[in-house]
Image (tube, rainbow, N blue to C red; front, side, top):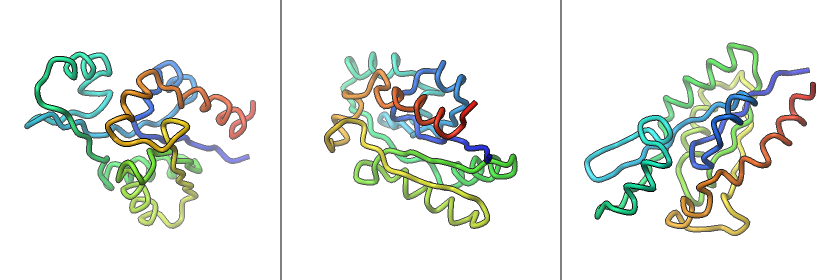
Length: 152
């Protein structure tokens, strides 16, 4: 049976214990706040983000991870013998899938599947995304998916 690595972006805010328990690889989105830029979940936590959101006059934006960041992670996982399942914020809401797809093309020998996800049951705008998934609701499905992909 093949080893499968799960890769996602930071937008679903998956709790740290699930990331560790299921060995999920998270590529951070870039949070841009005025002249400052942070790696989501690394240089700015959810608590810091929402606290600042309440008080700051400048509204933040996000930017997709770079093709290079995906390529480095995909190559490392491939060299470690993994097939890769990437689940990223919908292409209608973010350019993240575009970066991941470009990186996939750089590794034609690797098995990499990329799928869209919507953070809610309805397609929503970027301004609603963070407000609708602050507690990582999408992460509730990951343990089920991981048990299916990597049965013990």
